[in-house]
Image (tube, rainbow, N blue to C red; front, side, top):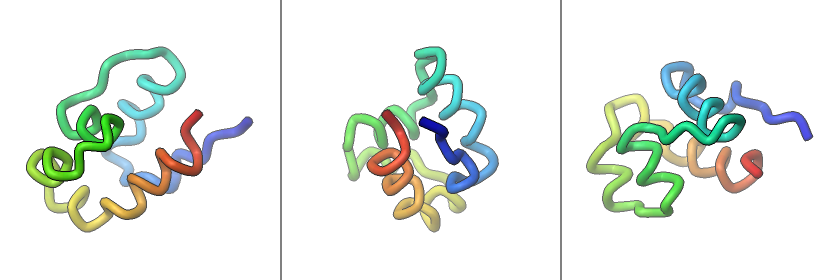
Length: 65
């Protein structure tokens, strides 16, 4: 299975890849997304992540193992 990280904002790709491929715990924003905590995800999101929340959640639902 090939994971398409290009669907994510560029500034969270590396930490997402480290989490998926090596189990390295990500920061608070990605942890909230992974835990499906919508309220905390928006509270921790920067402007770009807020605008791209649909893409980020879709990535984890459709691409992440």
